[in-house]
Each structure stands twice: as C-alpha cells, then as structure tokens.
Amino acid sequence: MSTYPKTSLPIPPQIRGGDRVGSWAYNTMDSRLSALCRRIIDENGFSGAIADNLEALARDLPEGKIRKIKNLLPAEEWDDYVEPYLGKDWLDIPWYFAEAYFYRRVLEATDYFSNGRDPFAAQKLMGIEGSIASMRKASYLVNNLPLRELNNVVTLAYLSLWGNKADLSLWPASSGDRSQVETDGDRANLLADDTPQLLELLAESQGKRIDFIIDNAGFELFCDLCLADYLLTSKVSAEIHFHVKAHPTFVSDAIAKDVRHLVDFFTSEAPMVSENREVHSLATRLQDHLAAGRLQLRDNLFWNSPLVFWQMPDELRQELAKASLIIVKGDANYRRILGDCYWPFTTPFEEIANYFPAPLLALRTMKAELACGLSPGQAEALDAQDPDWLTNGQRGVVQLARPFSA
Image (cartoon, rainbow, N blue to C red; front, side, top):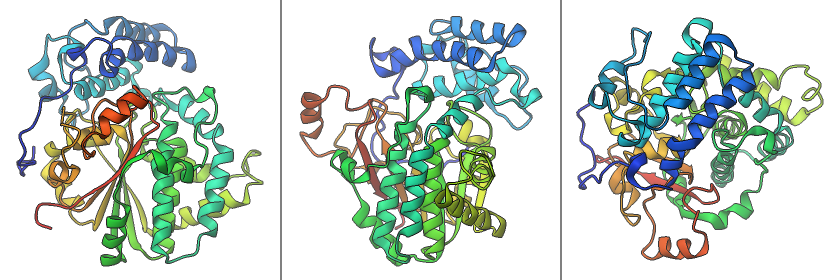
C-alpha cells in the first residue's frame, strides 16, 4: 500500500451507516442493498443455489457479521481488507467499505468468477436501450462542434457531468430516460465550477495524455466517450486512458467489456441503431481510436477495492502520474477522493485532493451526504431550499486540484 502523503489537514472520521438512523448511508445499508439482492434474482431469473445465496445475503443486512470472502482470486487482497472488521455488523464499519464489500459478496453469491455472468448486465442493457434518444442528441452535439476550440471541452465536460443522473444503482432503468441532454439548464445547479481553471490547464498541456477514472456504464459512459472523442479529434490530447473496474460492482459501474459493447452496439446493424447515423459516425471514430491505441482501456483491482484513493498502490499512482490531467467521474469516486469522510463543507477541494500525482478534475453529481469546496452559508441556504440536495442528484460540482508539487 502506498505511503505517499495525504492532505496535511486533520482527517475527519469516515462515514458509517450506523452514524445516524435515517441518513442516506443508513438507509442504503438497512434496506436498499437487500432490495437490490432480490432485484438481481428477479432480473436474471436466478434459481437454486444462486438465488438462495442472494436471499441469504439480503437477510444478512444490516445486522449480520462481516466475514471473509470465499473463493478469492489469487490477486485479490480482501482477506487483508476485512481483517480489522471481522465480526462487526454492516452498520459499524466505514460506509464505502461496506458497499464495496457487499458488491464483492454479490459476485461470490452468483459465482461470477466461474460462470462469467455479469449479474448487473440486464440493468446496464436497459439503461442503454432507454437512453437511445439522448445518445443520438449527444452524438449530434459532438459531431457538429467546431474542432480545436477549448470552450467546447467545457460543453462536453458538463455533458459528462450530468450523465451521472442515469446512475442505475439509484434508479431502475425501467423508470424512464433520466439522461436528457439539458446541460444549459443544469448549470444553475453547479455548486462549484472550476472550468476556467480547466481551460487554463488544457491550454498549457495540449497534445498530452489525459486519463479518466470511469464511473457508470450506459448513458454516462457514452457521454464520457463523447468527451474523449472530442479531446482526441481536436488534438487537445494525443492519448486517453480509461481506467475501469476489473469486474462488475455498484450495479452500473463500467468494466472494459461495457465500453467495447457500447461501441460495437452502435456500429452494428441492430434495428434500433442502424438508422442513427450520428451515433454510428461517433462510434466508428471511437472504434478507430481504440484500434490505433489513442484510446486505451485499463482495469485494476484497486478500483474494485474498499480502499480510498490516498491508499492507492504505488504502481498505479506512478502510472497516473504520466497523465497531464486525470478526470475523475461520479459520486462514488468522489467519495474515495475525500476518504468518505465528514469534511466541513467549506474545506477547499484542492486542500484535500492535492495528494493526487497529476492535476485532478472531479465531475460529480451529488448522491451522498458529504461535500467540500462550498462557500460559507451555501450549505445552509441549500438546506432551506431543498433538504435532499446532497443525495437527489440534482446538484453537481466541477472541481480542480493540482498536486503538491505543482
């Protein structure tokens, strides 16, 4: 495990599900995850031992005891991860750890590493099919933006940000298309916006490598691909690396197979896509980027681990240091940047996140009860306006941090 310095600020306690009855974290551990187990059974038609395993996992929440995971892969380190928490219940351990542990237990229950069947594949597919119209709009946008204009990167960064609203772990895909391309209307809900600093950074480092730490599949991933395509086609970046999960987790989190499937789907002759010329044109360029190595897919078990980002292995940190910019997507990754801790909301983002080895841009729609980088009084005003502002996905942040040495 890496020993590089964290923030010099005193680190607050980590969020735990049992901290406050009725909190988002509590309700996740108390009811949402058990309901998800049963949804997985229904959507996959699981029966027999797998259905029994998932039902047992559902009943284990939230008062069952943490145990070791069975049938680990040789490279996995879960025995070490769970050691401090063995015998504790789900509400008494750090919330992010508990969620990551739950999703690894789902793969144990479904025997994923033997049968290779993604238990969340049905949700991911429904998410794609339910967002075709929005994907067409997004494709038209990126296909028709003038090249080599950095302000257009901001437009697509906003699109990549609000694509998060289609997070399948919070909303079932069958509830309709929540991914409408409405970036202009959503700007008023940005609580922090460092895009001017982003433009300055890109102007200084054009033609270099940019890395993405990817979050969700489906429409959000499609928006990430739109941004990546524009960066490459405009020569803002010569090479882009997508860091994805090594195996399924958090329902909608993207693995390499999801990226390839999405690109292949939109270059296929499937009836629902064959007439979508805008999408087909974009997907063809993405295929070319992948084939030429301009767009590379990288997975790592760390992204599936329960560790926060300042616990990143040295080898991975050194790889990320090669990038001129790291774009970190989504709420769960943002939680890991912050250590999933109770930071005062006015703590500057850069003072927390400057341990990263390269400049970091966080694109987050807010779906958890933590925040930073807000102005004094901003959180109180939001509480009065919308008591659920931290968790309903209607607010977002675009925040930039440069590393210690910069």
